Amino acid sequence: MPKKLRCSFENCKAAAQRISGDCTFCQGHFCSNHRLLEDHKCRNLEDCKREAFEQNAMQLDKERTQVIKTA
Image 1 (cartoon, rainbow, N blue to C red):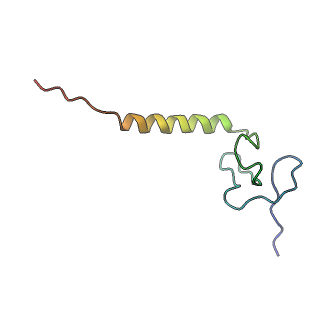
Image 2 (tube, rainbow, N blue to C red):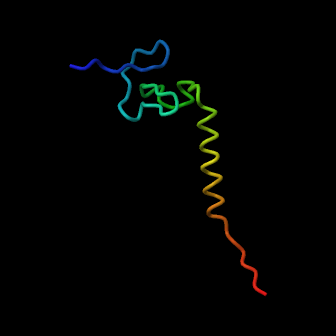
Image 3 (cartoon, rainbow, N blue to C red):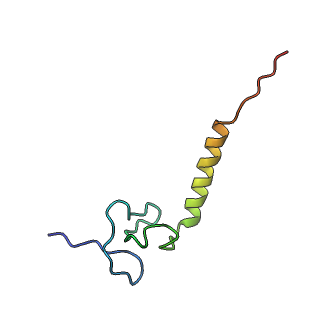
């Protein structure tokens, strides 16, 4: 029987949540209390924020209304 995966947060002994507890930025596995980037003090939080900002900026630029001037 495979060993239960424990939360990667310092001194937390709770079981890590499958899928929703996996952090793609620091590769940690976290319980329901520490699954959010801010809650487990993700070392890559700034990279995450920057990536989200860039994605939002690209989406807004793509959806920008274009004014067509006619002569």
